[in-house]
Length: 81
Image (tube, rainbow, N blue to C red):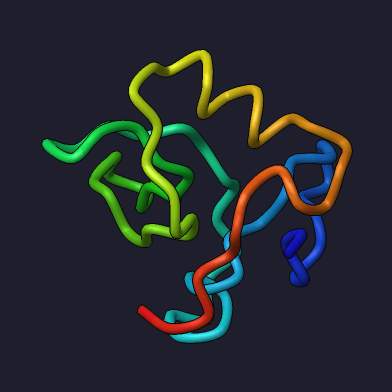
């Protein structure tokens, strides 16, 4: 599923969960956890705010390709936190 919430003025996609549950418009980024790389958002202090992707990838490059891929099924949007 592509990100249903839209984009920032600079064209970056906005996190669906951050918007729906936190009521904030935060751009999607590739982040890292112990489980691997994922697509998520950071709060204004730079701390992880939401994990948006169902998937984890082994490398930053794989996650970045999924985030920037034009096809809507490049990654799966989580629908609940």
